[in-house]
Length: 178
Image 1 (cartoon, rainbow, N blue to C red):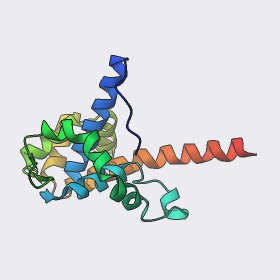
Image 2: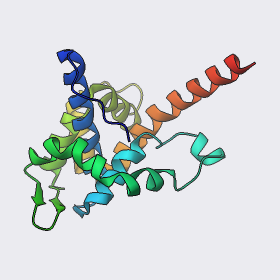
Image 3: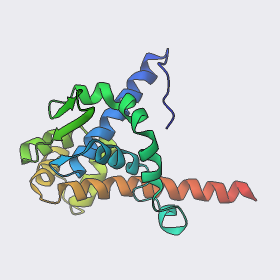
């Protein structure tokens, strides 16, 4: 895990923090109500590989675990400020561990869905809303928030984004390798 240092560019710094917050929010939606700190970091690290067809073809299936396990202190440093600002997370300093209990009520999930990046919200919307119906994003996300499989729908949305990106990256690699 490589941690970027404080950037002098405030727009870049704000984008990096926003990205970290989005990763935490997405992970919260996909994790069960209670989970360990390591579970959180595994979920976050797995976001980049969710839907990546290369993980099926030849990548080490334990890649995410191999990234997280030896780097927990780095993940803690990277996410500590964000997690300290989350009311649903309690950091037990004397135990050196994090305890989280996420609000899985429709209202809690809706608030988290609304905090996701617009691109992911739109991807989720396209998965859930049948073609030809032009409902508001908020209306669709409210429907997803009431779905017991809300976390799976978020996972599908992320997988769709990662899948298309991984295909483009692989195609570029093939074209430039020759």
